[in-house]
Every structure is written in C-alpha cells, then in structure tokens.
Image 1 (cartoon, rainbow, N blue to C red):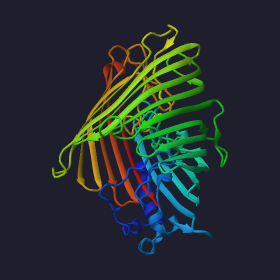
Image 2: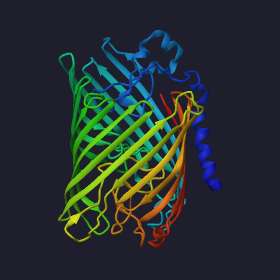
Image 3: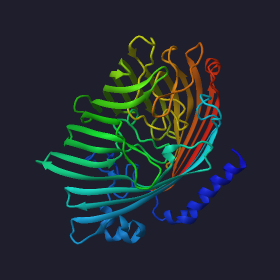
Image 4: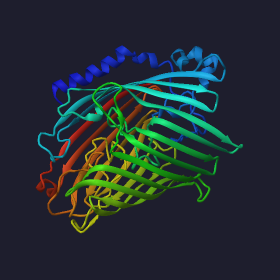
Length: 489
C-alpha cells in the first residue's frame, strides 16, 4: 500500500468520525438479542428483522419499537425511524447509510489486461425512507450518491451520481388468516436463494438493481411462491438518469417449502430463471444470448451441522448455438459446542461450474450465473462462476461476541482445459491457461467487527498464487486488501 493510498484511507476514516462522531453510536450499544431472533426473509411480505436493528436489505427492517416513548428517549437519533403522520396507521421512517471502502489489487484482472493494478476508495451515501399507509401499503425509497476516489482504473458501478437506487410500492392483500400476497412494482434489489447465483454486488458502491414487478405469495409455515419480470438497471453518467436496460431482461419463479415441511430441519427451493442478453461475450464468440436456468437448493441446520447445496442446469441459445451447462455450489460446516473457546466452526465449500469442453460443435457448455454475488469467491472478485472448480476448507472463530474471523486456503481448477477462466459479473473472458487444469490458490483472511448495531468494519486479504499453467497463459499472481467502515441508522 503506497503512502498516498494510506493517506486516502485514513482521510476517509477521519471524515466519517468527524461527520458522524463514532462516539455518538456507542450510546446505542449492541442490539438486544432475543432467545430465537427471527431471520429476515429477503422477499416482499417475508419475515421482518428483529425490531430496531438496521439490515443489509433495508426494506426488511422493522421499526415498530421506535414508537415506544422510552425507546425514543434513550435513542434520540432513531426517533426518525417512526414518525406518526396525521393518522396512527400512517407513519414515516427515515434512515441512512454511509460507507467508505478502500480496495487495492496488484493485478485486478490477474494479468488478463495490461496495467491492471488498481487502488480506489469508494464512497456510498444513502437516504432511506419508508411511508406506511395502513398495514397493506408501503412506499419505500433509497436515494443514493456514489463516488470513487483515486482509482487507477475506473469501476463503473462505483460511479453514479444522485439517483434513486430503489423506489417501489408494496401492496399486500391478506388471503384469510394464513396466507397473503404482496405485489411490488418499481425499482428494487432482488437477491434470491442463498444469494450466490443472484446476489447483491456489495463489493461496489452500487448494488444490482432491477426495474419491473415482483409478486410473492406466502402460505405461512408451509409454502412461498415468488415470481418476477424485471430488467437490470443501466447506470448512466448524470443524476436521475439511470434506466432499465432495454437489451436485457430477467424473469423467473421460485417455489420454497418451509423448513421441516418435506425434510427435517431443511428448507427446499426450486426455481426457473429466464435471462436475455442482446450482447454476451464468451471465450470464442460474442452474440445474443437467451439462457434458462432450472435449479434446486436445500439448506438447513441439524445439531452442530449446517449445510447448503444447490444444483442448476441451463438450456437456451447463444449466437446460434444451443446452451447445455450445469453448476453446483455447496457449503458444509460443523460448529463446536458454544462453550468451546473461540466458538470455532470448521467449514468446507465446494463449487463446480461447467465450461465449454468442445468448442465450435454447436453447443455452448459454459455456465453463466444470472447476477452473481459480488464479492464472488472472495472480496477480491478475481474469478466468476464459469468453467471453474473451487475447494475452500476454512475455519471460523469468534474471539469476541462482536468479532468474527475466517481464514483458509482456496484451490481453483478449470472444469475443462478447452475453455478460459472468466471474471466479473458479465462472464468476460479472462486468462486462458496453457496445459494443466489447475488455476491457482488463494490464501484468504477475513475479519468482521460489529462494533454496534449501527457501526461495523470489514477487512479482507487475499494472496493469490498463480499456477504455472496460468502464468503460461499470461496470468499473474496478485495481492488484494479491502477494508470498509459502514454506518447504518
């Protein structure tokens, strides 16, 4: 990290503590943790979060607790989270977010392009409002401003002037005592399932957002059906000028059985995604793509074990060729008893995504996720879920209740030697190794410190060691460092 980079990072941290004094958040203390806090569901009408706790998905928050006079007296800033209007059923909530994220890569593209060293400081500012008009209607908005400082190479999703990142209405219709339907038209974030194939892109200032309509039917404790027809947002240079991308669409439906309904302690999801992209790029071809994904996911926890596994098969057409691709992602963990020092969890992640083993045969075999989580395998974001096999044994420990550390080596192979490696959210072809399928090893260290419910830090380091085959194709080893300070209220 250069002297200039260190100065930029320290200036950002100092600016945060001047603009919003860090000591001001200490009065809130850690969020109260009930015996079994509900896990918020990232779907319209889903289970809301524990009341009074800011969330990554702001529209899953519940601020009913801020109506209590004693709570408002002890938490003066959070009075804004529950403001009565003329009628008791009409309430306004106002919140915000400020995040500064410093990142440094010695080779962001692992040598796939010249001069790919990059260092930047991202600034994410948000103003969140929610207007509830009776329990059956709410209007949510998230106004944002995004800036990138001192970037060696510009990252477009880091640069978006004043813009509504989200603005939508939720119209909820109860269907008896046990069922409800929520319709969501507008512009919104939309992570699905475990958030890997359809994620958030939290590694940049601007997350994945879509414009269109989403409908969710919930039969309590039994079934959920979620359907959507949207277009990804296109980020433009000015203010209030972003628009839905006319050259792309994303439609789909997921059906989820509640945990324990079909298998003990296990939730089961099945889904179908339909993606159209007028201009898609792969190793040998560029052309129009219409790709359908058919998949199933199971996840749960049984005793000390936790597990999550997902399989996907893809069909469709690309540049005149048919698509036949597959993907699998999984995560298995074992947690030692809570009385064990550091409360360790031993984990193993295994992922495999197909490549194109027979080029120019009329069939494209390269897997392409609809909107992959960024960060992907790690915060460095070096590789995508295409033509890759990943094995990541890891250890998680908690030296303190608010501090979580994760570390381990991560091993990568190409699924087929006939295809390239891929990078970024758009499956852009990266390095094409020569010879062996082995791509390289990443040594990862991650630290998450939840100082209070409002203030958090994250640190991530990766030392990427390229294989000889990767180097023979022009690839390079690389170091990545990322650290953010985030305030939500």
